[in-house]
Length: 155
Image (cartoon, rainbow, N blue to C red):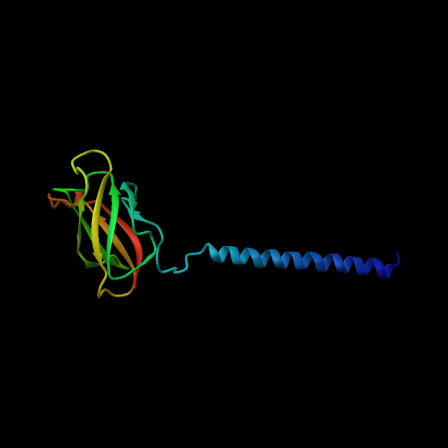
C-alpha cells in the first residue's frame, strides 16, 4: 500500500468515527429533550402526604378547564361525616376555589376509602396550579391537617 492510500484510509476512518459520534450526540440530545418536563413551570410530582393517595382520576400535569368530575381513593383519616376538602390552588398554593368531596364507601374504616368530587376551574387564572386534597379536620387544630398536592395546568 502506498502512503497516499494509507492516509486516505486513516482520513476515512476518522470521518466515520466523527460522523458516528455526531449521530450519537444528536440522538442522545433528542432523547433527553423528550424526557424533560414540557412546561418547566409545572411540577409533575405529587407532594404533601402523597403516600396517602392510592389513586386519583386527574393525572399530574393535566390541562384542566371547566367542570370536571373526579374520583380518587385515600388511605388514612381524611374524612369526617363522609366529607373531605378538595380545593383548587394557584401556582404559589394560594386558594383559588374551595370545594369538597364525598366518600362513596364506609368512611369509618381503616382501609382505603373511595371518594368523588366535582372541580370547577371556570373563571380561574390560567397557568400552573394544584388540586389540594385535604382532610376534613373538625378540631381546627393545624397539627391535625393533612394535604396532598396534585400539580395541574389551568386552561
